[in-house]
Image (cartoon, rainbow, N blue to C red; front, side):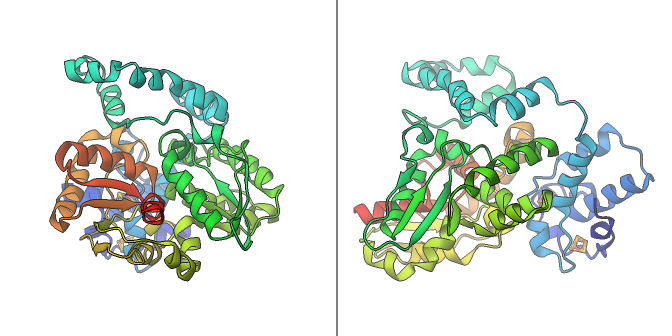
Length: 412
Ligand code: SF4
Ligand code: SF4
């Protein structure tokens, strides 16, 4: 860890009001400033690593709202994540971590096969029965949470059905690689289908290499730096085989991780890969005039939730809003604290359900106040978290990916 990043904190506290866990607890140990101090003392050997201290650090969502607020360029969330990674790396992964991070995620076929029982569970009506009878209450809490978050799965993962090479429609503008995130392919395939449709309509040939692997963000979350580097090397090699103008993703979490590959591996092909990565909203914004010609009226009241991985990690805020405002007939409502985390945080909402629920409820209150018919966002973690939250508490409000809404306007 770069020690300078730690000592840059001047303890001003400007990050505190931005931190979702501080807002809920008012505890210094659950604040960005407190976390930087803890990591520094642990690094200096002034504090011994204890379960209690590590528990304080694990309450951080790595949402990076603190980084956006810090005037000194300190990124407490990233420092906590790096500290966790360095502490854990090289040590043995637990059985479940090893299974998911090393045996499933790097192998899309296996990952997809592992979801087949869930698809069967939904298709046979068993899910409905289990939910109606409340049987899941008898299972461990994390399992109950995971089941509750699971929306209806598509018939087949998008990776299996999408053409690897989709030609541009009309005048050809260029060739892009599409990074299809695991969750987008397995769960939100309609959104990624819409992304590819928009890109081809705007004149891009879209290459979606079928052998691409998970971006490595779950490895980073679990402190498995070696696994992350392995994923990065594979993806850089695969996409490096094509002559691409951009590498585009519609998954905020993947985009943030792909852009950071060059922090973890230093060679020119990794840097060139990371430099080409764009969130879909960035590319759509480049072609706003052409996109506008394709959009038809969609009379809806819509608000936008900034995913942490798009707003704080990639600094993208204007582009998605601008795209929504292009849709004729759409009434755009700004959400209060739109860039405050929704409590998803990768697997945070399963690992820390109480805190995740508190954070989610704050978000739902702001959504309710807009009176919107739909919330638009750009990250599968937020889609999962808000879908469940809205279903339980604001069932009249829909949740959509940005590209789904734009495609709906094109087809209207
Ligand atoms: S992390 Fe930044 S904003 Fe927070 S206390 Fe330190 S210097 Fe201030
Ligand atoms: S990353 Fe988020 S939860 Fe963690 S310290 Fe920063 S603002 Fe707080």
